[in-house]
Image (cartoon, rainbow, N blue to C red; front, side):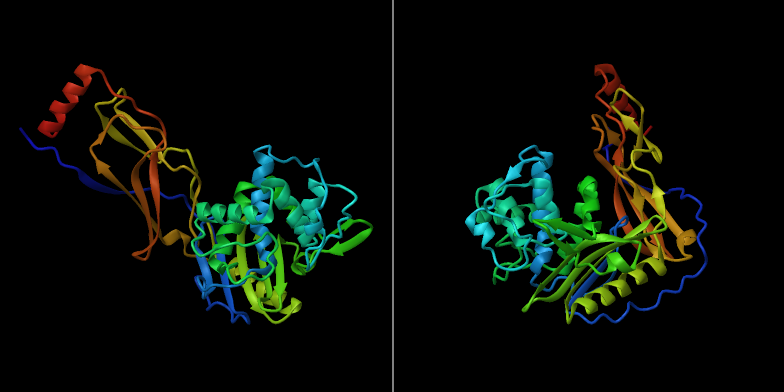
Length: 380
């Protein structure tokens, strides 16, 4: 009897034609006057520039990106609603730092509290929302840290919902990039709040502190932060020609500096790189033979769209390879990984993505399984 062995099979995979302007020139990343920075392409997830991406930093009000994430999650899960009215506790009302000037005698809607948190960076709004969701800000901070771990933020710990200084309240620019991408992807219906330029509450109008919202029509978020010990921080996202990049800059010297340094990074990412879509999610790119199943062929593809970021003019040089482990034996569940996509440029690996089954293949009947067992033993 012939022993059945698994084979690793690699085959070229067709790529679409690309019509991008020829350039291929990518200068070094600009010199950024800050403690640390991170620039990432949103669609591909590829890092375009960075300095000290995993160094521990004080996020200040960039903390409110995670506060917002947990709030949006609570709304989606119907534990909170936009029109729900909340009254600030004495603790929330007295929270130091920036505020939306809540009146402890007058309830505010969750919708207004979210704008107060995002546009006005109101610490009173953050604590009010945190207490409504978790009962206390301390418990809410634990929820924030737990959510950070779920998102893959490996070097982050939260002690409050506001970003006020605490030695155990920290993150990294890399982790903030992960969080920002997750906010845009997971809660697109709430993302437009980050582009609001001013908000009036309690007859007090406050402008959004993100200066790039007023200077660059392509910028549509996200958040600023400042404390004496953290310096001036900013997470920004910009889109152009179907692309989106995210920059994180921390530890700059002024409001103007964080805007200027962020603009440098965003323009660098958008000007010198392309991010073509290689394959659409849930669309077959190939098929593999299936043994012992109620179908002989299995369409395979990707769970979501596949993008790759390269220097402008280099997309036509990309090579794609599909690697599968054969034979494929039923049962196979839709979404189960059955292979790997490997993309390279000039022989250097660029990315790997899982290739998945696009439909479920159940087991064949007794005689079907028996016949395929014979074929496998004979190498047919």
